[in-house]
Image 1 (tube, rainbow, N blue to C red):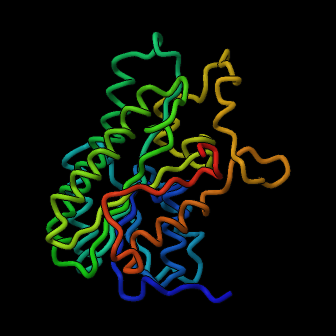
Image 2 (cartoon, rainbow, N blue to C red):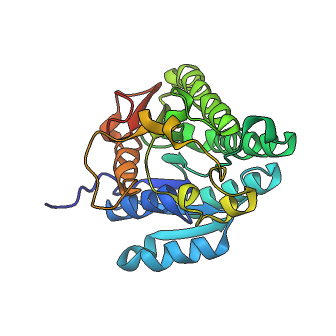
Length: 268
């Protein structure tokens, strides 16, 4: 099957582009002909993305950016827009996951997850609006999660941050509708990513996965209905990247203010 070329001439900024779904989104959009700036807090992750870009490398630039830091976002987005000569699609994939028993969750950790996931999405989007206003069929793809709508134990901070992103996406979709900027979000679930497998630098700095004494019976409702490869418990990040690419392209010209769940039917 021939690769779609929906991104010929499109200028794209992807945060969290150094690992997981963010990296997969970068590679998918490059494969569709886009010019991409991948941003991440991890310089090593960005080097890995560049290495994997292969023949598409000439259309890829990278910028080290901490989305939780206002000045880093301001300078990083400015640099990205300058390199691209504008901006048509923004993908806010950067984020962190911290799992812990609720009563053992410290205020510092709770605030850190909110700062990176929710405030970070706000900062990057705010700094990108001016360029998006004059972009071609401008679109923003945010990252919510199935945890924003369904019970995921031990993830209170993460769920709160993703619920906030989802609500903010709806508000922004309405606010900027007459300016033609589309805002949508994806809701990944049961997806292998830098957060779930610990490969992302930000993930490692925030903390480990589920508590050692986690009750896995509580996750019974989060089991994908669709079959996975033998021995796999998560689908690959490409499952989400393909949806991100659709929402960020002109193909989705009549879609805004909504979310697309990508979870293999876990929450039917």
